[in-house]
Image (cartoon, rainbow, N blue to C red; front, top):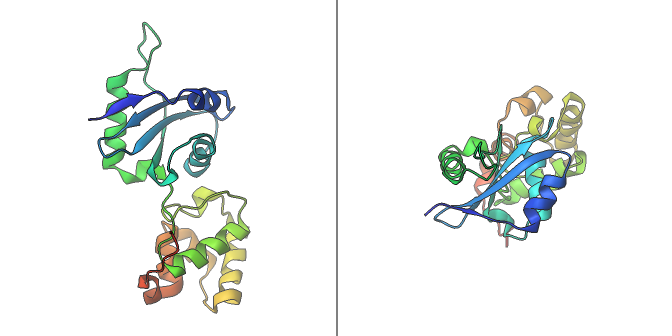
Length: 188
């Protein structure tokens, strides 16, 4: 059963952040925590995810951040609209593109690529479902990444191809080809 949950001081700390206007949390039947964030300004999903993960005392792989236009509240009381919060969370669960969760590398190729990208970008965490532009890779960073891929792995991938790749996981396939299927115990 889906249920709105109170994160106590965590919610308050998140609301105090300049980048966040409001927050609500919903627990799914499988135990995942969907954190609905109403952002202020240009806070993209991966950064919103990091703001939540920095504050929350949960297994990070179990937390899903959903950036919403407005956290639903009852007009008359200002209290959270539990039904609408649950509906938004259910929709997010059905549409993974709406969710910013932390999907760690599971292969050696993904781990090597992830380490290289985090060396070039000022980000705390990189999910295999993140896109490079979404985590701040502009044309200069993509050119640096292209050069670093050649220098470190002997693979030539132009910056435009890097930009067009939807996720880091897909980029690992572009860079390493069939070698990405070799699973490695990098997550535990």
